[in-house]
Each structure stands twice: as C-alpha cells, then as structure tokens.
Amino acid sequence: MSLPPSVASAASVPSVNGTGSAPAPIALSRKAKAAIVVRFLLNEGAEIALEELPEALQAQLTQQMGEMRSVDRDTVARVIDEFANELGRIGLSFPKGMAGAIDALDGCISPQTASRLRKEAGVRQAGDPWERIRAQDIAVLLPVLENESVEIAALLLAKLDVPKAAELLGQLPGPRARQITYAVSRTGAVTPDAVDRIGLSLASQMENKPATAFASGPVERVGEILNFSPATTREDVLSGLDETDAGFAEQVRRAIFTFANIPDRIAPRDIPKILREVDQAQIVTALAGADAAGHGDVATYILSNLSGRMGDALRDEIEEAGPSKPKAVEAAMTQIVGAIRALEARGDLELVLPDADDT
Image (cartoon, rainbow, N blue to C red; front, side, top):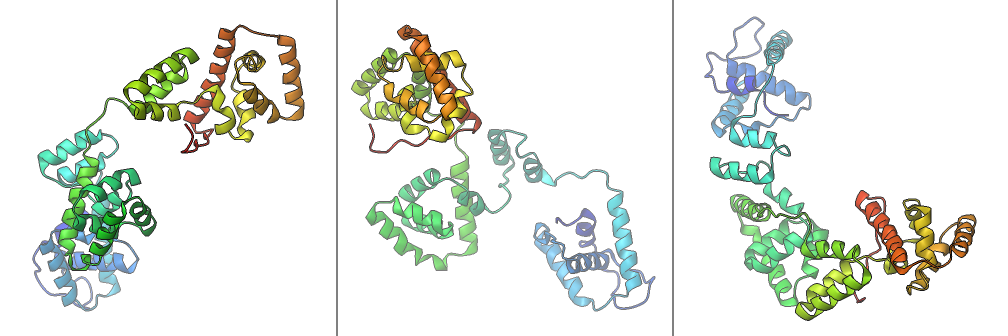
C-alpha cells in the first residue's frame, strides 16, 4: 500500500512537543500523528511503501517513532479517526510527477510515446529493472550474453532464474560459456548501486526497440502469402528464392503449411474439429481429388481419424461425387488449410512443430 498524502505531509512538519502515554486530548504534532498512523497500519499487517518518501522524511519519521514510547487507546482512536476523515474527503488523487503519470497510463498510451516522454522528462521506468529483464524471452537475452562484456554477461546470468540461465548457457559456444561462468565468481563485489545502473541500462536497451511496420517477420509474411497461392506459383517462387537466398527459402518452406502437411503437423484429435469449420461439399471435393493431386495419404489420414459413422458417410459421398477439376480440388484444399490457420490464430488448435531435420 502506498503512503497516503496526509501521512507524507505530516512526516515533514517539525514536532511541536514530545509524545508519550498521556491521556487525551493532549495536542500532537502532525509528525507524531503520522508516526501513530504508520505504527498502527504496520501492526495491522499493511504494506506501506515508505521508500517512496524522500530520504530526509524517512529519517524524520524513523526518528519520531524512536522517541515515542506508548500511546493510550483513546489517543490512537482519535488520530486514526482524524486520518480516516481526511482520507474520506479526498475525491480523486493523481500520481505525483511525470514518472507517476506515465506509469498510471501504462497500457493506455503506446510504448513509443511512454519512452519518449520518459526521455524528455528525464525519469526512469518504475520498478526493478531486473524483474523486466528476467521476463524477457531467451531470444532477447541471448544476444546480450553474446555481445556484452564478459563482466556484464556474468552479472546478467547471475540475476536470472536458474532454469533460464542454464538454458542460455547451453546455447553459448563453449569458450564463451566458460568465460562467463568464471566471471560469475567475481560478481560478489559488485555494489547494489552498480547492479541497479547496469540493470537500467540493459532494460532500456531491450525495451527501446524501434517500432516496426509489420506485426510479423518477413518469413511469416511470405509463408502466409504462399500458403494461399496456387501450388505452381508457390513452387516457382520458392525455386526463385533458392537461387537468390537459399537460407531464406528454407525458412519460408518451414513456415508454409499446405494440404500435404496435414498428416505431419495436425494431431489426429483435431481432424473432426477442422472439418466442422469447412463446408461439406468442399471437404468432399478435396478428398475426392486427393489421389489425382498426389495427396492420397492425406485423404487416408483424415478419413482414418474420424468416427466410424462419420468416416463411412464421407467415403460414400466421395464415391458418389466422382472426379473434379484440378482447380476446384486445389480451391477446396485451400479452404481446409484456411480453416486450420483460422483455428490456430484463435488458439483453438496447435500445429505440431516440424522436425528440424526435415527439408
């Protein structure tokens, strides 16, 4: 709980006279009243953020509490009642300063605006920077361990949770991992002040990233486009990418999900869920033309993971449908792939990750 404004202001008023266990209604200074309120709240188990006060006020409040001995119940009740009445008169309170205002609007204004305002006002982001660093993904932390000095990398490793630190260490080259591990043994002499400054610097580097125009990366965007492109177009584009940038072409291939990927990347339990999202006529067209399109194994996989009655009914419709034009078959397969992608986007389906050795 944050220290109420009344207590903060009371702590700054010089004491007029001492306090003790005298009966009410002895006059009390505002500093003494603040001490009584704080002591009462602490006794009740409240968490009071006294560290938010200037150091001078923290010292004055501590000194006042040290000078006091005991206060009778009537005096405590009177002071708490006065404090409660003062709180009750407050209709609305605003955060103190630009830092408080930015924190209060967190999530309501863009990160870019918040970052710019902090820089202009010269205020730091509230809270422990190491908490924000520990929340970062492995992909964000790994470059820091790779590129920062050994001493900074060692401090970062020491401040991380053990499982995440172990995972990061396992992804570093052997010599670099050994250097950082040894440097951890020398972090004991680092002062809390230095740790805080380093944490602020690292957190700022990780959070102050330039805004991008796209929510996803180039691999994902190209993969999504090719997912819904005709097979001939898709293969032609991938062949061209092989010639200009084989690495990028391979990443795109792994990002693409097509009708042919269903047996490898769709769990059997999800097949009925997918088919419920697609028009029955489109399902029949896609499965009826699967053999001719070279995807007979996909049709077999789909039919074998349906209930007996549903599978038999679908087989009967496929036999009655007869052959369809290749374009119609491909369009129907695209409908099924689109349903899979929509379910994945909603979080109702999770694709099985492809084997890293697959091409």
